[in-house]
Length: 427
Length: 169
Image (cartoon, rainbow over all chains, first blue to last red; front, top):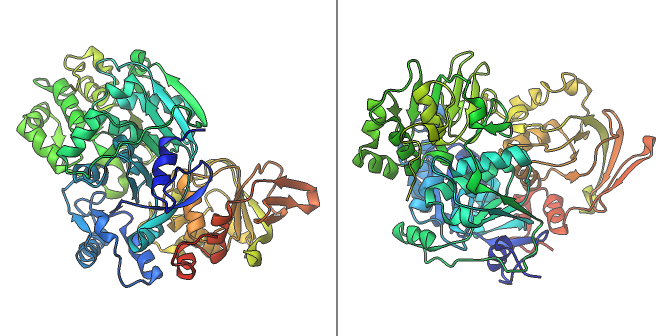
C-alpha cells in the first residue's frame, strides 16, 4: 500500500526517515514556525515552564504582530513589547505593526517550501499546504518545545482526497469551493483529517486562490490541506526566497480514508448565511438580502487578487448609499503593489476605505469594526459566529471577495458575474 | 501511567459543539486570568454546574467538544476547576491536542446513556468507560501509548523534562 503526501512529509521528518502511517504517533522535525500576537503570551509562559536557557530553533520562528495591529489597549501593546524583546534575545524575526498577517508573511518571506513541516499558533496555519507543505495549527506549549528541541509529536492523520474537476468560471473563486464543501460536509466535517486537493480545478488556480483553498480548510476541521506542487508553486517560492522546493506527491495506490469529487467547472458563487459557516446557499438564492457593511481581507481573502477583484468591480462607480466598504490587504507588499497599480485609488474613489495591512476587521477582539444592532455584514473572512465582530445584535455572512464587492455596489447580496468587472480573472 | 490510568468521578453532562473559547477562556473578556475564568466557566451552559461540582468529577459531552477553540488557556481553566477527565463523542482537533499537552486525560466514546451525576469510571489504559449503577459499558480504542506517556507525565513539558531525548516509549 502506498502513502499519502501527509504520511510522506511527516515520515521524512522522523529519525527513521521512512513514510509514516495514518494513526501512528511520530516525533518529527519541524522546519519553521510562527507565533502571532494573540498567542505570544501563552508561548512565552510555556517557555518559562520549560525552564531552558536557550532556544536553538527559535531562529526558524517568525513572531508576527497582526491581530492587534496597531494595539488597541495597553495589554496588547505590552505583549508587543515582550515580542520585540523575545525576538532580539532568541534570534527570531519580528514582523511589526503594519507588516501584515502571519499566513501571508510566512510564505512571502521564505519560511515555507514544498515538503516542509510548518507549525503556527493559529488554526489557519493550514494555509501553507498550498505550497505542498505539511502545515498545521498548534498552541504555545507546542511552540516552546519546537523552539527548544526542533521537534514535536504528531498523530499522522488519515487523508481525504478531494478532486476538483474543472476550472472555476470567471467570477467564481476558491472561497466558493470551500463554502460549498462546508455546506456539504459541515463545519468540522473533516475533523482530524488531512485533505489532498487535486485535479484541474486546482491546477488552473493561481497561487492566491490556492492559499484560500488551504486556509479555509481549517473550518472543515482539517489538520492540514495539502496541494501538489507545479511550476506555479515552484516559481512563486523561488521569487520569495524559499528553500529549494522538494515537491512531494502521493503514491498511485495511497491509502485514502475517503475520496470526494466536486464539479468545480459548474460551481456558482456561494454564501454562508448568518451565524453558521456551514449554512451555505448559492448567492443567486440570497439576492434579496440587504447589506450594510462589506469587508474584504483577512488571512483567507486579503491577497492581491482579492484587492484586484474589488477594484475591478467598483472602478469608476460608487458603492451603495449607507454601505461601508473596508478593504484590508494581507501584507505590506500587497498594499504597495495595489497602490502602484492604482487599485487603492479605485476603491477609495468608489467610496470604500483601505486599512493598513493586518488581521483588520476579522474579529471583534480588536474593536477595528463593530456593526450596529440589526445590521448585516458581508465579509470575505473565514468565520461568521454570532458576535464575532463585537455585537451579538448584528449578522455576519461570508462569501468571496468578488461577491462582497458586488454587494457593496448594489447594497444587497449580488452575484459578481452579473456586475461589470465581476468576471475578472487572475491569469 | 498506572498511577492515574483509572479515573472515577461524577459525570457533568453537556451537549454538542461546546466552544471552549466562549465558555472556558478569556478570549472575549481580556484581563481575566485562569482563576477568574475557572469560577464562571461553563455556567452559561449549566447554571448549577459550579454548585454541584466536586473535585475530580468528569466532564461528559457530545460531538465536537472544544470546537473552534485553539486556546490552551481553556484546558488550564478546566484543570483549575478540578475536572479529572473528559469523555466526549468527538473533539475539536486543537482542543484534543491541547488537552494532551497539558495533561488533561480525555477519551472519545459514545456518551449517549451517560447522564449528569452518574458515577463514571474510565480506564485510560484499556479504553473502557463504565457506569456501574447502570450496567453502562463502552470499550473504545485506548489512546496511542505515546500519548498515554505524555498524559502520564502530566503533559508535554513535564514529559520533556523527564525525556529530553523525546523517547516516547
